[in-house]
Image (tube, rainbow, N blue to C red):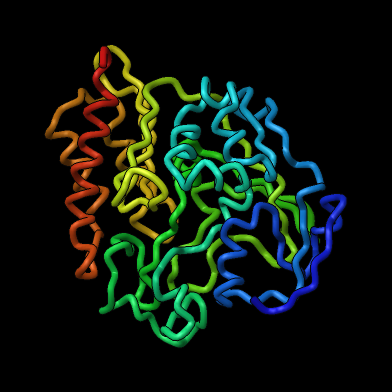
Length: 326
């Protein structure tokens, strides 16, 4: 690890507008610094600036929930209001990392975590995300964990988190503040697809700080988070499905779906949700939904299996979610 200057912020204003890298739990950034994938000259610790509360908040749709950026993942997953009103979020968090990491990881830091692409972590390998213009070694390389949706010729890495997938399905909003003031970013738009700028992971501008996340009022229905991985714990998703499905007199009244492990951001397809709404559940309907989700999917060789895996996972989740007495 290279030498760096370390300071501590006492208020959010101390961190907003700073050129230093923000650190809270450090569960991802410190690993990157040890490998010299990232070599910041300055770090600013924000653990003592507040932003660690979970509390009701007003939204346009009614009473929701505000989660401070420094709320630890373990506290968020265990919060009674979350478990009762937004259980999808709790389930997704508990599916990620280990208990020790969840005790340190924060809401804001979890959103900011970077890809786990092998080549991104190997400073001897070309990587457009780490060094723009150097190439993408994953294309034509070992790419079992890589994207099947939304990739580009410059990068096929995936976003690795679970929490953000649930937040995308729940229509969460990320609150940020920077030198030019406060703004809201929908969770579905917070992370970036690689396009021609794979080095950019998210929509934060220089000097901006995540203040918290707002959840709209609870969605009625079954909340399911299904994560398929190589082992039962401490493994990133090969494919994950976050779903909230509500039934109304034998038909699908509401459907919210988001997918993880398949793109550089949590993947959501509003057209699929619209197609499902108002329909009677059937295997044929669920197959059409999977077709629509995967219409632009493209394997890279080692990860071709993700396409049928996502199809089967979505159909299984929709089947479970629409069994009203299940």
